[in-house]
Amino acid sequence: FVRQKEPLGIGDAILQARLLINNEPVAVMSGDDIVDSKTPALKQLIKVYQKYRSPVVALRKVPKEDISKYGIIAGEKIAPKTWRIRGSVEKPLPEKAPSDLMVIAKYILTPDVFDYLARVKPAPNGGEIYLPPAMDAYVKKGGRFYGYLVRGEYYDCGDKLGYMRSVVNFGLKHPEIGSGF
Image (cartoon, rainbow, N blue to C red; front, top):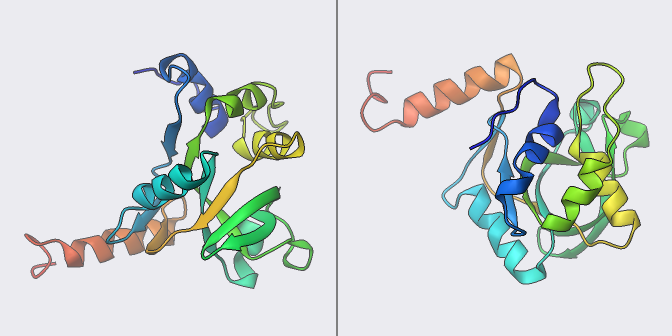
């Protein structure tokens, strides 16, 4: 294992593990984004990766009023639930958003994406390194990056209300404590 010495964003965390992946594709998932589904979100992404042999990210349709809270993709639908990503915009105004498809922090990345991630400039407010600029640079240089509209109930656990919804819903479904809860 590796340890991220300071909270400098998901991009920095991924780069810390670069030497461990041995030139293999790698799954990246954030604990802030939970998808409750009969078929796990990662398994859904693996199927897309196996078909296209390119990086893939989980997507979710978001209501217009929430678009400005998330990273939104630009792309074209190429198969059911599947988009070829052309770029992304971080927290756009709803009227300027290229779509209503938000990025969920669940990815399968290929080793070539790491070169782009290593060149991302840290954000001016806090020095965090984000994945979308690397994704955009990768796509602009001809790389293929796919998005898949995962099935399941989404919980944004980076948001207090989203976190509480997840706790309550998982508590109610739990086989041992659900009825008491």
